[in-house]
Amino acid sequence: MICGASGLVLTDRETEFFKEYSPSGMILFARNCQTADQIKSLVNSFLEAVGHDALVLIDQEGGRVQRLVPPEWPQYPAGNSFGNLYDRNPEAALEAVWLAANLIGQDLAELGINMDCLPVLDLDSVEGHDVIGDRAYHADPDIVSEIGGRACEGLLAAGILPVIKHIPGHGRAGADSHKALPIVATPRRELEETDFVPFKKLSGMPAAMTAHVVYTNLDETRPATVSPAIIREVIRGFIGFNGLLMSDDISMNALEGTIAERTVALIEAGCDVALHCNGEYDEMVQVAKNVPHLNGAALARFEQALAMKSKPTPVKRGVAMERLQALIA
Image 1 (cartoon, rainbow, N blue to C red):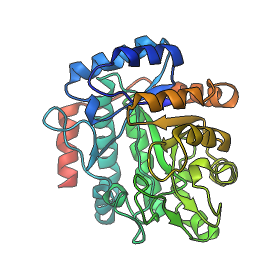
Image 2: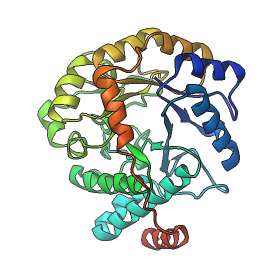
Image 3: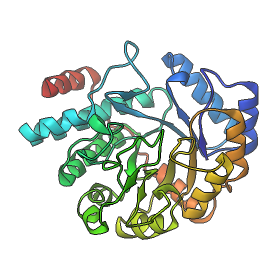
């Protein structure tokens, strides 16, 4: 499992929880982020408690989804800024998104964070709820693939592992899965030619996050996160993603049942890791009691993801930031 923490420091029982259950990772939110020194201390406390190589994640996309915020950290452009630039100047857009991702990666690496839930590969769709909205790079799947690929390269060059999301595609979803279950009735053939394309083209990335979305032509009732058919036939099959597959946050209202039931369902469906974000201790215990320790293929994918973390080759911050601002302006 990957779980959250309740605040700026670990409580005693959170420390004991991490020691006892040894989760695969921890994800940080705004409630966990105040200053650089505080975040470093929090990350170190987590790693000391689990006692093994672990993932430390954050949602640092830029735009309105950015946990590290000014004035302590720069404000980065939203995803659609790069898509809009691509329409005018593709080369400039691809340079800009690489620079933004690399600079974000440098911010994270300095704090001990090793994985970013970026890029968003969902398409910008007129059907979709604005929970994705300007987070999407573009409506064209090939352009999304190009921009998303460069974002992955920028993160990896900073020593940060990217997470492609929300597989197999959240762009058409007409509801916010934090609040309700979205249902997409688009024919499979059309999804294969559009929404699935960026994920298929970037299927070699180390990790992916699922969509809490029902695709009625793939599975009439179950969202992708808990659908064996979608994970087996689409995500692992048609898309060909063989990396670490984590759920989106299982405390979101799109999923039904208790936290324990959701956990069992996603593992049985084929997810490798359950992601639980809200830091509620009692829920974290229920997740931990209902996930197996990483083993077999899931453990191999976890180790494979960690192995993709390369020695950083970042660009000079000042020069890179000036260039990014000039390109986006």
